[in-house]
Length: 165
Image (tube, rainbow, N blue to C red; front, side):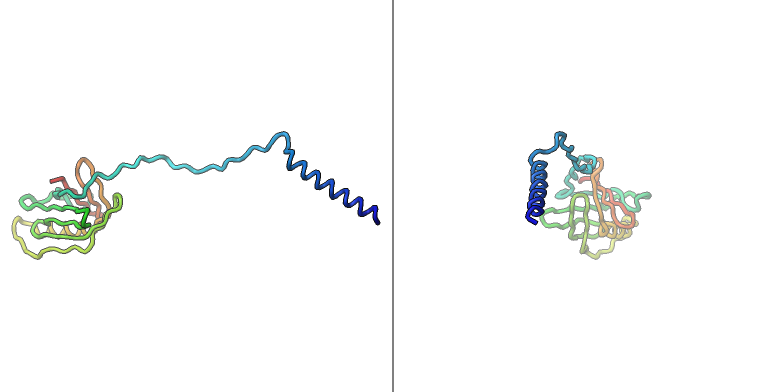
């Protein structure tokens, strides 16, 4: 019985010793480490939006993106986005308007628009243009400046194009 216990102890010690030797004496050719691959995205330069705030913009064209109309001459439609107050205000052609706006990068939203309630007869079509303009601006979604013109994309595929004043 003592011999069996002695043999078991010797065998366990040898196994333990063999394990220790492998830990402290790694194999001659270490395994090559595998480097995890990190998916990469193409580098896209970030072009900041040209400052459209704190400037007055004059409406040049408006309407559906594929069939824009020129703004009626004789009654200026303009908008000024005031960064300190978060308000956009200006003239819709006949009436003055004001609204809150929020901008995040190229996204812009306009909310809570209020305006005066005058009625103008001249020039012809001014009230329809005013309605189209204020409805489109209330649905603003994004903006960009191209060739020094402010383009505001709105819901229902509407577009407002302004030139600087």
